[in-house]
Image (cartoon, rainbow, N blue to C red; front, top):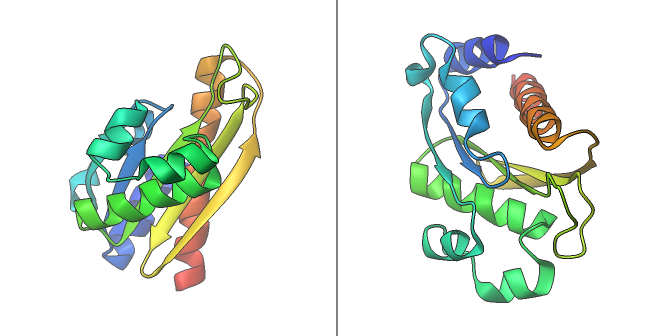
Length: 156
């Protein structure tokens, strides 16, 4: 799956998409908007790289962060859910993880969580990716693209 196909699927069904990114630093938004006509379905994104911004912009409580960490399924799900609401979209994808170079919160390099909020359901997925920092980031956005296409096909 690629971002051209993602673009086509969203435009075909007339649904909107937003994103909330942490360790990917806006790479997903960049790839989505490189494809012509992305403005017909992609409403925007937030990059909440720091814990403080996850709390301040998204309203993710420090209690959740203290209990599970920012690199967790719980945080990814909260990011996607809040992003869906704030961006007023049908679907929102969120990314949190550790692209390296060192362990963080006791999480290995390559530990990644991607969540998708759609309608009243949010699903979070965990991955252990390998490679350089840039390769881990690229793999994560490609996985999210494929996840979204698969979810859209299930809804048909």
